Image (cartoon, rainbow over all chains, first blue to last red):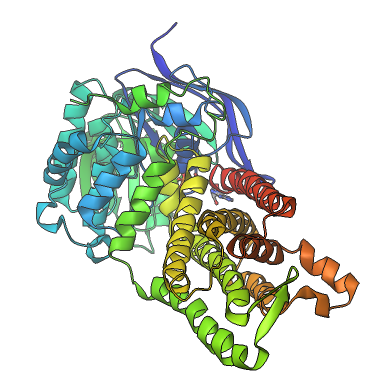
Length: 308
Length: 275
Ligand SMILES: Nc1ncnc2c1ncn2[C@@H]1O[C@H](COP(=O)(O)OP(=O)(O)OP(=O)(O)O)[C@@H](O)[C@H]1O
Ligand SMILES: [Mg+2]
């Protein structure tokens, strides 16, 4: 037996004729932090729901903790903490009641929950809102409560579908910190995100999905190495001239991406490239040299940017 | 530290019947209903209780004055005592239907609450049983409060009448499980109205206010097959002390209704949420 907690082979999900997840293979190892990246509609959430044993696959093999989710739904879900993309809090209940009843759904004792709720309220920074109705919370507060709720059963596998969407920067960093600590305690994380910095920070390994298929797999560093150059030069000529300039620049670098507002030039040394451009008599309005990031990998693989 | 972890609790059910859809914890849904109810409006509850009482006074005593006694199973009884059990059965039905159609429809379609429940180690049968359990509790409370009014008025001539309370719960269970099953197939509030369109005539013609013998025999047959008429005969047999094997038949009718309703509800919840 390997230490793989999740094993998917040829995992496929169809909605009618539409193939949302197209025969993907992946493994998630114990204690690993595994990311799913991809543009809107790539099939990330669908994959998360199937792994979370709340959606049935159409075909392929899937084992979670050695069990088939089709046969052992409740048992598998007992190991999981799920933070769905869309909050599904109980609007009729207060903040602390939401945490309480969710724990009761898992069968946890009142005594245990009493202390756990305090801990989670503190984690979500919602102590002052404990008796407030969920309806009255701000979007970010709801998100924090949903995340806290996912932790109530001290899950072995925490599944977070875009956990930080809607959080302010401070709350985001607090969450990252908390996720690091959970990881240190041996919790396996499965995360989807649209924030590349988040993926680079949090994920040991990730898959990039597009149109239901896996485009690439590996650690963030490995993916950058494999799919991008060391550095990127971003230049702007103004929106009318960008595309005519791109043709002239193409030969100078390894790869070029034209975005509506700027051109990205991929090269091992951005400064050297910029020199060449100036000496060719071209004068971009602005220029910026930076290191390649997952964003560039993503662009290369899916032809799309994440944050416009 | 968790003394008994979520995993240990779930593992304890391994190998037990229905483990795919049931974790033996519908109590938790019940508890949720109780917490939500504490802060919910009492009006719905109160109105469900007041309605049969109003009917009892308006018809039982108003109309009863004109009618006098009525013959039931060869015994002459006051008109109010004749309609009281029918009103009890009807209020059990109404409470159960309200909970299992309107309330459940809203939760299914406009609230994502079941998504949350089913992401835990609960199964769809836990959710179905828990929600139906709440409808039953309501039916039980209606029955109890109605009895608290009609017993002192002397409208329950037989001691068997005490069994009318569990009978009302059985009736509520039948209606709630079928109501919930139907609701899972409904696509809009308009479609839900179909259930209501069916309920009012059933109430008026099921022998609540006069014996079925006034109808031609083919119509009598149709009405007798309908659940409310079964319910009324069951409760009336008990409150009037007219005990016979037919009552067992009526009870069986509801047990079958419960089984069919639960089967389809679980199946549909699985299909709706495990998409
Ligand atoms: N219940 C459903 N019925 C029909 N189609 C669905 C359903 N759920 C998802 N899809 C389709 O499957 C595809 C993948 O959706 P999914 O939610 O998995 O995307 P995603 O990668 O999570 O996207 P996003 O970044 O926008 O969250 C989409 O084209 C979507 O329209
Ligand atoms: Mg998604």
